[in-house]
Image (cartoon, rainbow, N blue to C red; front, side, top):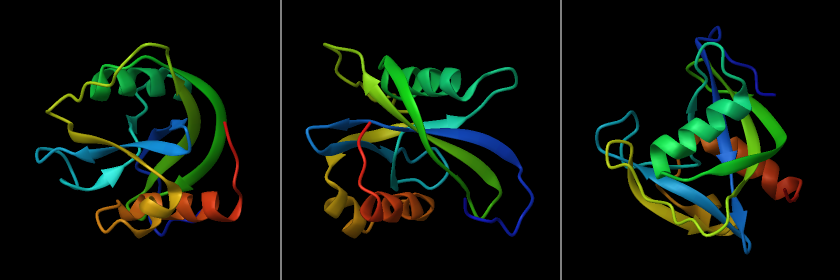
Length: 139
């Protein structure tokens, strides 16, 4: 886990969906924090929610997509004090993601090398990408 210079302010969950060697990413809408940046889908864990419940809810809210959490993969703390749990998830069959324009401007499927070199990647996602690069794993 990455140490944070700030105390933990909140908790969040990140969903990692891999299909045919490509990762599901979103470009953040202009109305949210870090507009235009690419990141994995996810968000805050609400009081009383498990990380898995938050992951399912966030995919519904952001992408109108039902997912099934598969397994916990990693955790990190952002420089601004958000403790994130990273989970592999899989999309329920026969569903197409539909972005909620209030949160998501675009849906992308990128390979690991494409994510590592993409100039719009959210900086707080880069440590996870480096982890994937050094410890290739699958859901």
